[in-house]
Length: 174
Image (tube, rainbow, N blue to C red; front, top):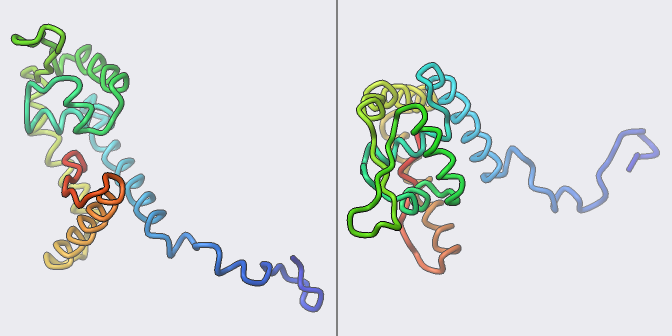
């Protein structure tokens, strides 16, 4: 609404109290930070033929090779059709292979190829560089406290979503 005396735009009375300014919104700031880190990581890994979508699955498989598609979906936090699309793409690039499960033929396990395993030594240092660049100027203590704060936020929200105080954090982040 326009102030008749000054001609400037004013919000309706009480309106500022209702809005959460972006600069004060923890959710907005976390989302913006995540998007920037993701874009920066994508710049680093693209020359190696890896998309950000593949990255999350590779990270998990480097920790635990041979998971089923369903297990990968659960850990990465994607729907199974999304996981299947990513796996097919990685398979075409020669990064993974699908193998029918020996005990349950309905399940398919995903294994890294030699090429997929070798990418670990190329890409993990790039991910570490992204993180180091993001926290440039932070002391070791500030970095540790920041991680503690993020873990506390994750635990608070996981508890609200699941109805308990689960401590599962995302192992795929850079």
